[in-house]
Image (cartoon, rainbow over all chains, first blue to last red; front, side, top):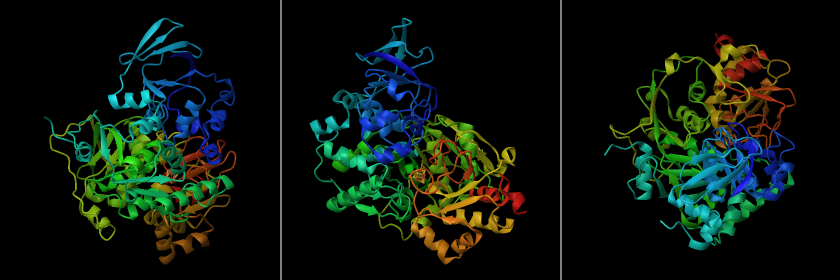
Length: 164
Length: 420
Ligand code: SF4
């Protein structure tokens, strides 16, 4: 997949991704996507193009485990999030919803860079704007299977349970 | 082969595999909690996955706590949906006013030593105090558990935290938790378990340990687990009929890091806005004016927390002018105890606002919301911008006694100075 980098800082918590009070009124990703990151940048949500890639510093998605912080991102047509580390609940919610979490060094990525995420064997990222290649951590087998299926919903529809 | 940590042992038992840090295993879950913040979505996932019946309804618990009582038509509809689903499938449901799901899991004896208890809410880590492997999960995970009874988990590396000494007077488990969060940072334990131990353990009883386990997630940890001892068994006595076996770490277990926490060397702490790990000693922030004081949450809403706060308030001569004190018990059982022993009457006489047992003002979804420019000091575990429903307020986190001292002075103050 190739997309435009949308860059955020470190320690972005789930309340910054989508405010708790928003999910009180709706759980629909197509509604919630309009409020993505509103606390940090009120204009951000309107500027998202499908295929954009979120890029952040360490500890992305810390704070509450609320899954709408993933589904609102996926619902906006963002297929992957790149960060050197994720909060564990965000990471597992991403996997379970088919949003690819890419653990890699993001320091040399700038707002608007064109990035390609290669998913052949393991994971790698290429910054098309700078020509730089960035190594990414591989995903364990069961996580791959869930992401490849498109998330836990299609996975369970197909298999009825974990295949272990 | 090296020995195992508590976490590795529990996840080995629950997966039937030789689970080691870094492995991803599929585990059988003993109990799973869904709240009104997560269960409605889990029901959507359940239906989307083609779920028809719940594999073992006794495994699942719902709690109406985050929007209690429902502050809007939409949240009332979420509650209705949960009630109907729970009735249809025979799932236990804690009603509005019964309290915070995490507190109720603990009070009802659903987390026992050696068990795997998960919750679709990040503070499910709280039950680690009971020697359970306890961690926060997502709504989709909860749906998968409803259908198949299992969850995939990465086995965490463990950080060993050795507690020594005893907390001095005026210093509380919350201060220990804040100090640890300050030292480790909000991502200092990401993907890892905190495993508590050491000679300081007997000085902390089960309710003290709940505070430390609750805070594990503020350092990014997957769980914060204690060994079981007499205090654990005493707490569980009469609460559960489930047989359990305490799990201890092997002497040669492997830890990613070892930290020692000297309880006797601690002074009152405070987390400054808007980060849980911006921790300093309370003395550094002394004099900062506050207009709202919040006593409650799954960190600081138990009986002893209110006793400690009440004692400081009474000794200090009451609430300062211009300060709103909001009291929200973690559960109805807590409220009942406070009613019986006169603490509630004390708070009312002092001018406190009493909220429905539940999450209350903690995350801005119901309860009192601070105004623009207001400084709040709270017994909660999070102080992100906007956390209490207003991004223009600033939240400080401290122990119940320190919060009460601030209510007395109208400014952040050391409780040891208010109660000499
Ligand atoms: S009291 Fe606060 S931290 Fe605890 S479960 Fe409720 S909202 Fe979350």
